Amino acid sequence: MPAKRIVIIDDEASSGHKTGSLLEDAGYIPVFVRASSEALQNLNGKVVFDALILDIKGNGALGLELLRRILQLYPDSAVVVISALEDIRVAITAIKAGAYDYLLKPLRTEELLNTVQAAVEHREHGRQLTQERQNLENLVAARTELLRRAITDLERSYDITLEALGNALDLKDAETEGHSKRVTAYAIVLARAMRIDPAEVKIIARGAYLHDIGKMAIPDAILSKPGKLDPAEQAIMREHCLRGYTILKKIPFLEKASEIVFSHQEHFDGSGYSRGLKGEEIPLGARIFAVADALDAITSDRPYRKAQPFANARREIERCSGTQFDPAIVRVFQSLPDQLWEDLRTEVNHPKMSIAVDVPETLRNR
View 1 (cartoon, helix red, strand yellow):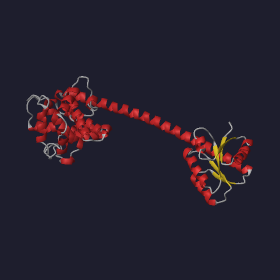
View 2 (view 1 turned 90 degrees about the vertical axis):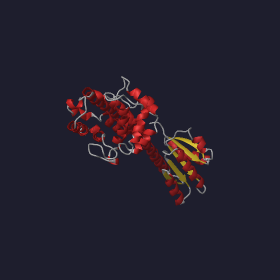
View 3 (view 1 turned 135 degrees about the horizontal axis):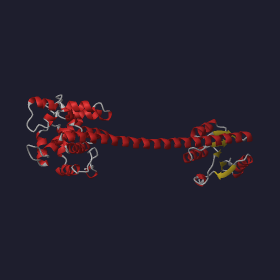
View 4 (view 1 turned 120 degrees about the vertical axis):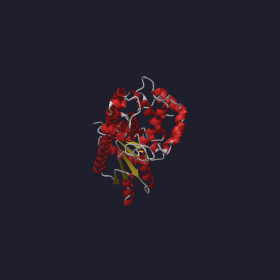
């Protein structure tokens, strides 16, 4: 093992060199530093040591202050204080300040060497613990990064699953093609404008994208009927909310989104379906979706009319504030410019655009 370096701080050269000689004879490498206002400057960053001996003289005040400053600079160092002062208060203060041990002069060689050896071992043990802690922190950081990547990959696989479900619905109901992507993007922008937690925004996005998934359980004769539905057919069509909820609630990562699917036809005044929920009884995500859904319905072509401008949608949504829509969400919607919705619709309608669980980068911060 390489010889251990022991720093000796003393304001008397003869005393310090005497202590150094005892240590040198025992196989240590002593490094003498005169105790002065420059002591720490001479020591700091220039000397690597395994333990330090500090000789306190006088009333002990200056030595104790030096001890405190040493431990501030070298918080993990092992400092042995030696002194001719028999004042127990000085010894207690030194130990409380962080000294490893306190020895009284005149020094006995065996006591000095045993104490220095114990201080060196204490320092070495501290280094090992620090290294082990650092290794553990590095391991935790590495594992955390692996877990983060795994979660990201898993969430991506979730969204691929969502897209597959949406594509299956498009095959069954051509009228929904593009609608789910657009309404999801609109809902995300509204939710972010309301400063909703990002994790909750993802739930809202998934609920919005799959809001009509229950239509897969509706008979084709009703779903594709060109004319107006009769009351019995309307009742069956309204079941798509419950059917969608039933499908999704069994899927763990879609369980919360299923509540939005169940409630997406509820009205703020309680006149909607399936359960006649009112006000804040309706999940927040479903209330946000209602505005987004109306925006897309008004600005899209329908068999009975052409798409209307976004300004018309703004007026209609304002008119239905407090009845069909949550007034607080309508206020947020009205604070956003028409150009935002127009640009978003254009990007979402792009043939290469995937599902809108992630809003296009160019529109993300608007």
